[in-house]
Image 1: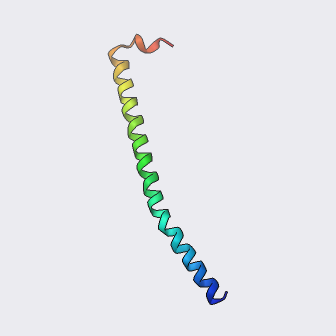
Image 2: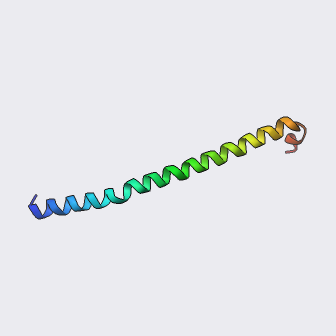
Image 3: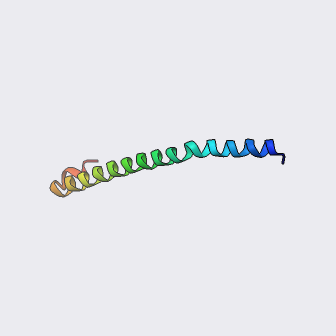
Length: 59
């Protein structure tokens, strides 16, 4: 591998690392938001079922 190829490879990998970290953090935050949203919906549905058991069996 020549010096030019090595320099190009180092530049490419540093450019990739420039967006991988922020993309991973953004994906993690989005997954956290979705998980919290689903958990709150599940908790609300569970409370609704315990408050009115007959209404939960409509389907």
